[in-house]
Image (cartoon, rainbow over all chains, first blue to last red; front, side, top):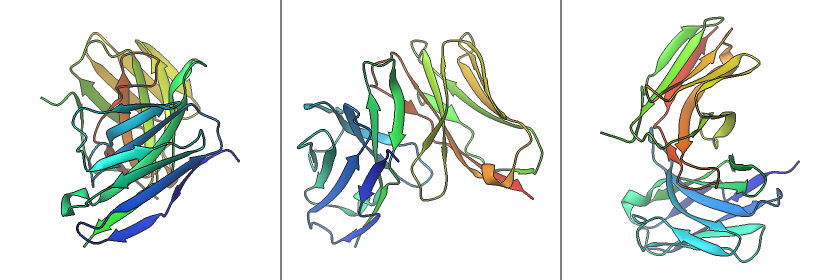
Length: 115
Length: 112
């Protein structure tokens, strides 16, 4: 089945220790998104890639970076995690140009704990 | 005022009840409206997608948009315990897969 996969599902890191979360998709979608979702809050868009074009939200901290080496994979790097970065990180994809650009498919998320 | 507001719940209903979930918004430019279902510790799953005002039905689910009131609703008929989840509304201005704004979600429990 075509899907969005996130690894790991649970990640524990220490304060200030860099961490990388990964997302892969078999949907051949041209857009990949990273969201941060804290408990009982709306998902907050961090950035997205339209093909190789990177789009950063204005209020995304510099501590967060992303890479998309190819169509299928996208990574979220947190350079120096703080306690406030503990959250669920959601990857999503969509396909612009088919009339379904707003239909996002989400992965299961990675729950990040910062100790 | 937040751009999208949603009653956080939790909302508890007996099995078989009709459920009404609602969002209000402030940006009159929004034209595309989505409802997502999110089970605990899982990613959101797209349930309904509508454009502009009107109703859309899919099985037990009906999405309703009233742009004049800046108000959208999701109705669930014959609710089941498997409908227990958090329901998120989302909206955007155009069809280019950008600038989504999500509500904080309403947590629903359907009791057997």
